[in-house]
Every structure is written in structure tokens, then in C-alpha cells.
Length: 214
Image: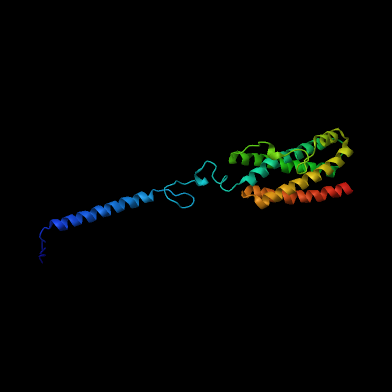
């Protein structure tokens, strides 16, 4: 069976119209392809480039921290360091109740690694210790230089009592700092550490008060 094709007469107007349509379709395709390669910012606005932390070297670590997290960490590091130093001083003495010795070892074992973790966070966040978050003697339970001097010179039984008294106050200050972080912080790790500090140190306060009473 032979198919006959009817040839339409050539029309310059028809040819120009077809050329215009093809040109328009080509331009639309080019714009569509360009759109596929356009990045968006965190608010979904095209053309600004992504600022998401997922593309940064510290992905996941800087995504949600705020100034409250930085302040909590800057303050808690020297706070922990003093607790570790006080524990070392007590552990170097003789004549200390084994229960108090065990508590000092427990505090040192818990807070030493936490110091390392918090220093790592500051490095990741691009922050430093600065003025140690404004920490100093009498701040959030911190012992004064005079108290530490008396504590260091005391014999075992006397130092034991001073340790329990100072560390109780020290823990109370840490819990107050932790509660502020829980309320105001946004970094999941920092907030969880604050929760852990609040729980564990509250339990240690109960133990220390019992030891003092006994």
C-alpha cells in the first residue's frame, strides 16, 4: 500500500513562526537546567549558596549551639578543674575516711573526662576560654584562695571535713549553672551534660551531707 504525503506549500510566515517557537523552547530548557544547579540557602531562597553546617568541616557540631552553650562550657571547665584539684589534694592526705576517699576518686573520674569533652566543644565552636566565663572565687560555689590554702595545710581528718563542706557548695553552684544551660542552651551535647551534672551532683550532695552528719 502506497502512502501519499501531501506537501504543503512553503510559507515564510509559517517558517518564521516555527523558528520562534523552537527558540523559545530552547531558552526555557536552558533556564530549567540552570535552575537545577542553583543552590539554596537555609531559608530556601535561591542563588545565595548554602550556609548549612552540613558542608562545613565541623558538620553537626556547630549546627545548633548558642551563646548560652559557650558560656556554660567556659564556666564549667574551670569549675570542674577546681573540683579535680581539690580531690587531688584530699587524696594525697592520710587519715581520710575511705568513704570520702572513694567519693573524691569518683568526682575526679567523672569530671576529668568532662573537662576534655568541653574543651573539644570550644575548639569546634571556634571559642576559647577567654576570661574563663567570669569564674572566680566565690562564683557559683568556687572556693577562694584562702580556703584552698587552709584546706591544703590541714591534716587528713580536718581536710576531709573542709573538702565535704566546700564540695557541697561547689556542687550546688554547678547545679545552678546546669539548670541555666538546660533552660537556655541549644546544643544537644551541652544540654545533656548539664542534665547529667544536675543529676549526679545532686546525688553526691546527699552523700556528702550524710558523711558530714556522721
